[in-house]
Length: 359
Image (cartoon, rainbow, N blue to C red; front, side, top):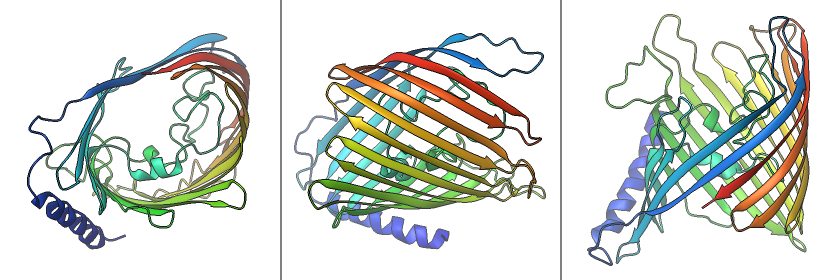
């Protein structure tokens, strides 16, 4: 994807916003008022895993995630909707306090988004595979219960958030037509950066294009297909090879209370440390109970054209229970296997329980 092509698409979207906004004035004279929301999640886990000779890993531990949201929206007399969102980390854990900060302009032309937010690829894919309790934000390997033993990505594995997550950018999403939507996104930097960017210091100029189709077949068979392509440029140095190309595709089908789906990610970095990720799951969604099973598998070259590839696979069985609106509890059992670039295997087994609140 060339920058010229993206700029033409972006210019068209900006022109549409300007035309839509040319008609006068707000439907009210008051500024946008932000509402308060957020999430609070606490988890307790136990695990038994292979260790290095120097390690003494505890068999129990806890994990938490808390965010506060400020969101608001207004509608102009001409129908143009303008919204704002500010999401703050309530407990930073070495993260910046402002997690997401962005504005949306929505109308018949689609949606234009400006600010610190991952691309629409993440919302198009949604849940990479169905889960009854945990989400893509909770990871047994690397975060909750099992130590990471190789270089395989465990954070946001199946969407473009793994490459460019909540940094400044501009995006455009088309209206839905016949169940289909498309989106393009541009982020000047892959990390927090404002103002002039020194391309010698980090990978840069991330472009992606994504699409999604959803429809219904026969008697209540709902199908969704989504995917995209992303490219990131190298650091501009003699040894800069941290750019990449990648694509993903996700498919899901829902029949009544039964959901099945999976996602594939293929990553081709310029340093030739290729990685492929597979995820698949099934879920029986009830009220208040839901149960699911999922399996993930990944391979990675620790060196170019490696003879022995790093490997990670994981199986989870989950049960979730809805106590009330925005209040969920559950239990997940898991088995993991990780292989290093020299063929050493690390197995792990454990369980996670906890509570999730959305307000």
